[in-house]
Structure formats: structure tokens, C-alpha cells
Image (cartoon, rainbow, N blue to C red):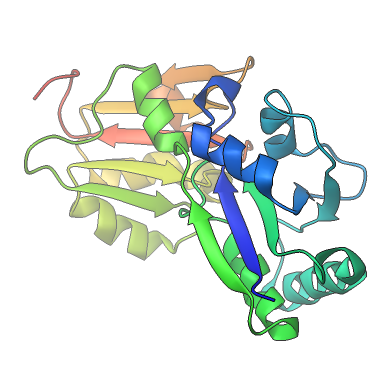
Length: 236
């Protein structure tokens, strides 16, 4: 039997931005896994899609952080624990926040699934990315003309971030919390930046937008994006 793992991007948090293709795939899948960061936690992706359809869901604890040697065995244990459910399923779907092709936990899940089911295929359904929604919320084009746009993780080394930002006309930084109080220094070293905007929880009822120097304060939220532009304003 041909088996497929579907990684389905459901957008950054606004249920109105889930694509028709994502909902259709979730409806038609034989098994849908709801990713949890820890036992008993709510599924962020699940809360988004549950607004659109009602079906049976299977929770799976998926460690979002931690070292690879701790994360991978935890994922394999979950796969083995659910073997009786997925062995007879042709399509297994897992919704993830944002875009399934960008910083997606589906990659780690699929890599471990292949160790126990080598024939498992992967299919990705993209969703609206957090940086796209963040830019839309502040009516700002991410890049225009010949401008160079970088998508960067705050978990990268400081030197790598400096090098990438120096070569960029615009940038979207994910995973800000590891930068801590080094963020102002990073922007000063790679500037000048005409526009600095941080959007916390874009698309959520608790969305928060901070601009200027205040946007560089330490940020603990996983769901935050920092947008940087050399130019000021919304138009070239």
C-alpha cells in the first residue's frame, strides 16, 4: 500500500487565511495528527483548523525545542505508539502553523518516520507564512524590484546573521527569543534600517505591533516576526 505523509500549512493563526486546499486535504485524510508541544497542551494548528471542520483527531506530542539527540527519539516513540493507527492509513496528515515548507516540524517528523516506514512518501501543502501576514498587517511590501529579501532564524550564529543582514535590503527574522538583548547591537551593526517592525502573534486576537527601537526589546514569544527594511514607507 502506498502511504503518504501530508504536511499541511494552515497559516499563522487567522482561521480566515486557511486555504481551501488545506481544508480539503484534512477532510480527506485517513488519519489526522494534531501536534502538541507537551502532554495536555492545546494544539495551535488544531485550534485554527477546528473552526472549519469537525472530524476525529489524534494528538501527538511533538517536542518543538531541545537537542536533536533528545527530540528524534521522542518523535520515534510517538510514531511507534501510534503504529496501530497509521499502519492501515494511506494518507496521514499533520497541520502546522504558517507555511509547511518553512521552518516546519514536518521535516523532523518525516525523517524519523522513514526510519520505521522507508516507503513513506511526503507531500507538502503550503500555507500563508507568518512574515507575509505580518507585512500585510502593517501594509508593507516585503521587497520590490531588485531588493534582496532574507528570511532568517534568530537561532543562527551572530556572525552569520550579521553577514546575511549586511547583504539584504529587507529581512524577516523568526525565532527572536534567542537573540535576547543582542538584537539592538545586531541592527546597529548591520544598519541603517529605515523601518523596524515587530509583529507578535500575527492574525491572533492578541496580535501586537511594535515599531522603532521598542521593537528590538527582548522577545520571549515564539510567534513573533521582526521585519526590517532599508527604505522607509510602503512604496519604493
